[in-house]
Length: 377
Image (cartoon, rainbow, N blue to C red):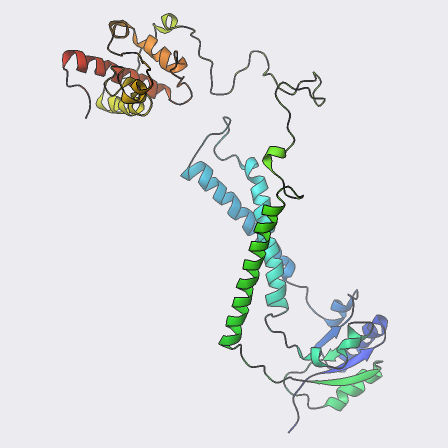
């Protein structure tokens, strides 16, 4: 019975000799060839008749998929699931998504290149390539060049292959046998490998933790409190005027943020509450009042609350005659700009929420003074 062989390996002294031998061997009818060289040889893939590696196409497709996935995810989060207008720009401002698209594209492409090369091209985790056990492998990794004729199954006419290699210029020929199948990975060995990985991770984690504890300011460790910055009032040579703080151009305002034109309650007294006094509006006003006003003015707006009374503060009584006679616009003005210890809620409440709060305060005044039942439950 003919012994099964993986290949017949011919050794050549130079890359030129190897390139010249390939056409001669293929002309003898041996087309399943593989070359082993210590460095890349230009033109060898074409001479062997090997097709172009599919790895480049795989990386291209994975990169495009990564970019498309990043774009779709950012569109869904920014324009669909949780839309937040930023600086007056459109919700789907794809220009701002380009950096993340690039990073995810590189991530997908890199993993595809690495895993595709290792798992598909090199067929890992198979480590037992027969040529690695040959006598010629040591010279092949230094300065010799090998050409292998790899048949399907057994090699019935080894002498013909040996003769063809010698005639093509091979200095020596070796028959590489198919190694015996290695036993499957045992559960005990797999458990040991996992335990070794876990122990290595724990050791690296503890070493990093104590290194940061013992040497907290060693480079390249950086801290935000140590980053370079320029104070608003400091000089800067970057700008022509020598100042670090940029003053907005004269006569301009931020988009969607027109300046509030009134300076005192008397000027704002002419403002008219545009919201109807409906149950939904009163409910919205009650929510705004309870979250921002109750802590000082009390649930009934009488200026009595345990928190403010504890440190002797005396918030305004919303039921006083002066506030009852004040127009809606004056109360709206106080909510906008604040008064005394009361902060401004201009940035915290929308215009509708501020007018709804005014409606609710009017209802509180009527309910406490006239025993009205208008307060929404």
